Length: 473
Ligand code: ADP
Image (cartoon, rainbow, N blue to C red; front, side, top):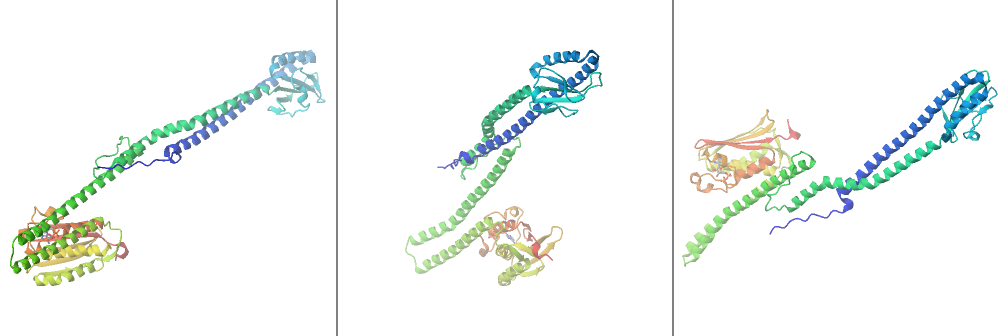
């Protein structure tokens, strides 16, 4: 039965959705408040500007009235200006005409006269005095001795308009502050829905059936990228698990055969009484089989270690030729016993970055194979050199041994692959794991391993490894 991972409950306060909603509220509210304050100030300025415009036109009109009616007397001027003041009563519009002594010669009835001081600054633009907007200016020279005019209007209407605008701004801000979180929460829900779908799919995945993949819409957004990356990881994981499964199955298969052989030999031997020599012979055979099994188990462990090794831990700058020479020394006795000559030409300046123990394993395996698959009287040439073009350390191991057929050559690095056993010496039947271990180690060191071979002529194994930068000469 497959168990499905539970999706952990996310506290609302920690949820991305709530946080997006909160950020949205803050951003929208700040933008709206800034926009409304700007709008309020603009309306404020526009209203005041309109009043000033009207006052400037009124000032021009007063000048004209004084210029035209001065000959008819102050009464005629007052009559004309009173009519105008009456027309703008709702704005409490007023006008004052001053004489040379700066005293009011004539004032309109309307307007907040008492609030306005007698002497107003002569300015080209209107100014605010108390609750009034006022403008004063020079009058054209006239026979009545009038020198200045003062006009003004109440700002009551203006203040009322500003209050209306302020209220409107406040209402909009209040509505926005209430709606923004709700709208933001809804929007964030749309944005994070796919995240929830992905979490649910990921939670339903089980290592035994890694067939499901995260959906992606193909629009190339961040969620699609996440889904593609995650699916990619799942593909690699599935391949890795499949590989592990096959490895286990292969290992079990390889172990089953010798175990079955030991069991059946024991059963057959015990089926009837036999002379002591027979038992001895069977026990010796069992010990031999157990030794082979031990080698196989060790190789399996080594391979699983090599597969897990990522070339990260236990890494040092390794003198490559030292490693090769130590392997040659180790196998020199076996080679000599089989009358196989080993020549060696190594570049002692080459250091490679890696695990000394694992790299020794590679050179041991390759030299061991070269000896195993070379007939007595044969020759093995070992060379290390620096490939200046690729900047890699190259190891070549040539032998003039049995060689490998073109059909077997592509499979020699496969797990448990052994070429036709008939052509091997009795003692050379190996586990078929050696080259596979070499390949795993070399690839973990970001290197390559390849083989060129011809049946009956010999083989050449070529290993390349990146040179250690710490010790390059
Ligand atoms: P084994 O334990 O059988 O040697 P390996 O993985 O080391 O396993 O090698 C796989 C197969 O490749 C061997 O069975 C052998 O047939 C072939 N092979 C490896 N090295 C050589 C070589 N130097 N010359 C000829 N055949 C070789």
